[in-house]
Length: 118
Image (cartoon, rainbow, N blue to C red; front, side):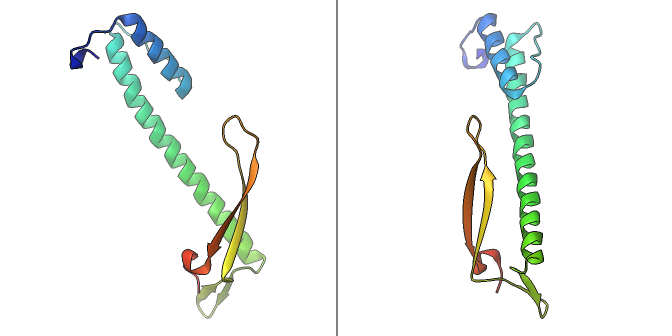
């Protein structure tokens, strides 16, 4: 970049901005200053990464709440004398899908201590 004493032609900046925009699923913004467009896209990448991370936390919380209420409804977790009680081992199964791959069931095993239960 120009700040580091390196001069780059406009065309490579525009190509990189186009590729970043494609990856972020946004329209590229080309102004008179391609290096600024590049810096703007880097800032947008940070913002999009944070937004995606928050969305995945939200999904995880929703899934966790769903699993917890299901476990209570099925009697796996019980409320006894003001305390939640569960078996010594809890196994949860969910489907995980990575980009480009088919969904795959994954089991997660937790101890009661890990979950904060007695």
